[in-house]
Length: 126
Image 1 (cartoon, rainbow, N blue to C red):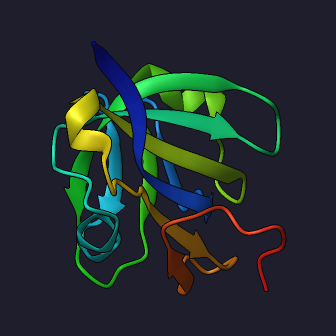
Image 2 (tube, one colour; image 1 turned 180 degrees about the vertical axis):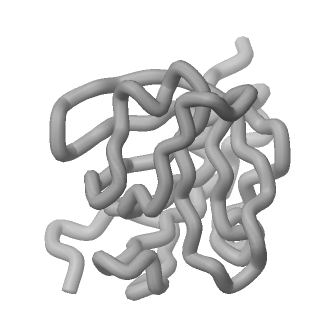
């Protein structure tokens, strides 16, 4: 049996740009993608904490160190600058691959700086 599992999460990312006229996707600081283990062009689910919108797109590389989270194309109607997002990447695994598996969880502050990196959801993030 193949299971779809949370692979990585950028928790409480804040939108820096919203570009309706762009082709599509979500540009994310390449450093954040690297830490989370999310690949360029990988499908991502975005959960807008601010307004409750939920949508899917794909990740593209943003400038390293820029802290950019730019929601582009049609998705830009669902997330505006300053809004808070949870960005998740999922992957399919065979059951045997799940032995010892842990997702990569990256917790961000309001400036998209990394506060904490872990592999389990804590009861409270400091």
